Length: 571
Ligand SMILES: Nc1ncnc2c1ncn2[C@@H]1O[C@H](COP(=O)(O)OP(=O)(O)OP(=O)(O)O)[C@@H](O)[C@H]1O
Ligand SMILES: [Mg+2]
Image 1 (cartoon, rainbow, N blue to C red):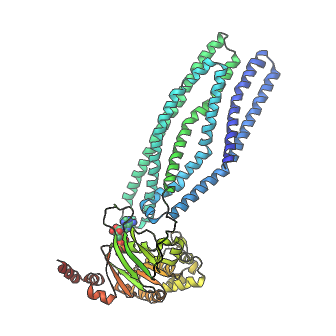
Image 2: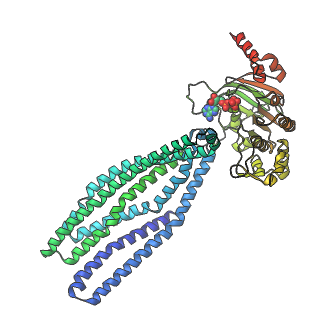
Image 3: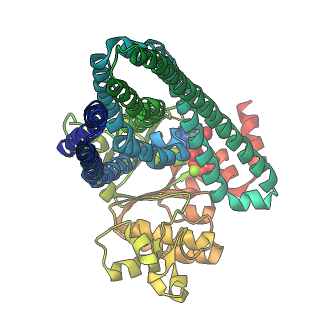
């Protein structure tokens, strides 16, 4: 790729410098055949000019051919790297970054980079070489007039320098704003039901209009900056050229300069017009590409999930799933804030099903997310059959542990493919079994059965249907450890009972942690752990906890008296 690009740049430089040969041929024609009135010489000169023109065109074609394909390759490779990075980033990264910012980086910014590699990068070099060579030719032909043309160089450079700074700042702002705009579009598409349901489309549209007006304002600032520099870049050389033309004509009239030299001089100067005028655009595009590259690497340079496996100080005996002195604080929380989970000690015995109960927002989802290492514990450790989870390769951990999330997200794929995400090598009968456990018999009535496309680009399913498919995905691999975050919340009592009966068979072989809100789900479990204000405050069977814990009684029954009694006892 580099060799090809260097070849392309060299070809472009040669083509561009060919343009500087034209004036020399002109000079020869004017001072030679034209002055001597020799038509044959004029024809010869014209033929040479034609040949030069054809050569220049061919060389430019060659340049395009050299770079077009490899550049598309570069863009595709950068995009693939970015996508890979987004997949490998820890969940905490995605908590922090707005999706629109990531989307715009993967699309617009990479396109800007590719355009820069294709066009401005080559031409900044080509035009600089051409300008220097051209000015040299001018000074050699007539150093007095040459210096007149050189005079604007210093002010031009100063203007370009100032422009670069202003434009860099504006283009960063513009690209960030496009990212924000993308986020708004994405959220309003995903939240279209809420927007319509609450009649918010007008205010949403207004918010969108305001943002796009901001983007427009920034783009106008950029355009103003660009117009300013283009004006200066066109005006100053043009003035210098006019001055040179007047001085040159006077010199020719005085006989100090040959007419051919003046023609050559002026046509060389004219040949430099495009290289000089294009500098403004090229600088602008380079700035945008620099910003785009910076935005790209802001994402690429974020630390990935640490793939290293931490050696442990000897394997402990013990089996099941064990939390030992686990403390957890979200990565974006202040370091001195109260941790979401403080000192969790919990042992779920091998083959046991433990229900996790607690008031809403007490940290149940957070606790479950620690097991497959979606977040890493702040202190303490979690072991599976005595092995520290940080000492296991992530693939192994995530094959051992299977999760059902609160939000049953489906992908745009068939039912079977969605289920198979839980275990890619699962056969058809395993998928059917998993669908059976989840009581997803509705799948048979879908147009194409398990091959029906669901998800965003497919058939819409009801909340309970989605939840059952997500549950099937969790159990399909028959994992050793199951972590279920409120997996039955959207089901009616009868379906829930049927799923529970089937789950009981699955759970008999697995060690499971099940977040539960309803007594019916809790009854699935052998024991119950009560999570309260970031601590496990009680562990026991459902009956035991009903007897001993007022908070548990309250959570299970909605019994206010129990809670009041509890408060009274504390007071
Ligand atoms: N990604 C996050 N970053 C920072 N704080 C978070 C994040 N997710 C949750 N929290 C906070 O952690 C606390 C516990 O949240 P969590 O989702 O674990 O509660 P929960 O017990 O699952 O509640 P529910 O029963 O409503 O599902 C909440 O106060 C919440 O604001
Ligand atoms: Mg939760």
